[in-house]
Amino acid sequence: MAIRKQLYTWELLGDNTDGRIANSVGYYPPVGIEHSILYGEYGNVQPARQTGLVKEDDFIVIEKIGSTPGISPYGFSVVGDDLVNWSPNMFVNIVIDTTNYYQDPQNVWSSGVSGFASPYPRQIQDKPYYSLDPPIYVLPDQTIDFRYTLFNDIQLSAENNDWLNIPQSTVLAAVFVEYTHYDGTDAMMARKLRNLGIPVTVGTVENYRRLLLKSKGLETETFEFYLEAMRNERERRKRERKNQGIATQQDYESDS
Image 1 (tube, rainbow, N blue to C red):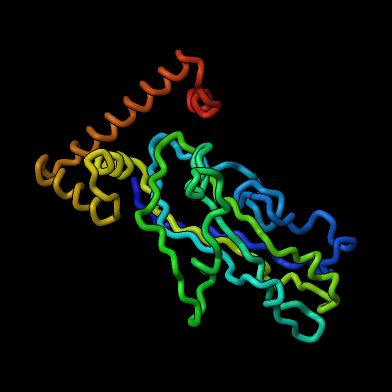
Image 2 (cartoon, one colour):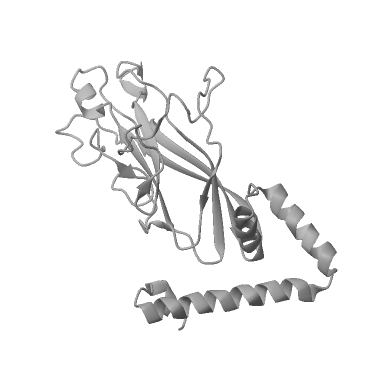
C-alpha cells in the first residue's frame, strides 16, 4: 500500500531535417486530429504503447494537465539556421473509457484545454487561466487516455524557408500530467471517501487511516483484516466477470 505523486510528460522533438513534407514524411502528427500520448504514433510514446488501465486495487486522482503554449504559427524563434522555438496551437483532452472529459456546450466532442490556458512548461511571464478543479477520479477497471490536437502545421510552416534545420534538442510540443496514485488499502480508503462525498486527497486519506487506527487500536491485525477483505472482494469480482463472460486477459493471467 502506498500513495505516490506521479508526473507524466510527452514531447515532440525535432528530426534534424528542415521539417518539409518531403523530408519528414510520417514524423510529425497531422493537424486537427487527436493523438494519444500513451499509444499514439508520434513523439516519445512509451515503447509498450498501452492504454492506461487502472487495476482493481488502484485509485487515480488527476490533478493537473498542461501543454505547450502559443497560438500564432509565426510565434517561432530561429537561431542561425536552427528552429529553437515554435507555437503548436495545442489542445489536450482527457478520455475515460469512451467518454471525453471536455465537451462543447452542445455535449459534442471538444479538443480540450489549450496550452495558452494551461501552459507547460510554465514560464514567469505565463499566466494560466485554467485549473483542473475539481480533480478527476479514475476508478478501478477504467481506462484513461490523454489526447492532444495540433492546429499549426510545422511541415507547412517549413515551406516558408524561415529555417533550414529543426534540431532534436528543439521541443516543438509537450504535454504534462500530474496525478496521485493510491494502491492497496489506501485505494480502498480513497474509494470509501469518494462514496461518502469527501474529496480524495493525501490529507483526507491519511486522516481516515488515523481514524481507523484510533477506533480499531494499533494492532497490525487491523490492516491485515482490510487487506484480506480487499483480496476477497477482488477474487469475487474476478469470478463474477468470468461467469458473465466479460473477464479480461489480466483476470486469467493472475490465476497462473
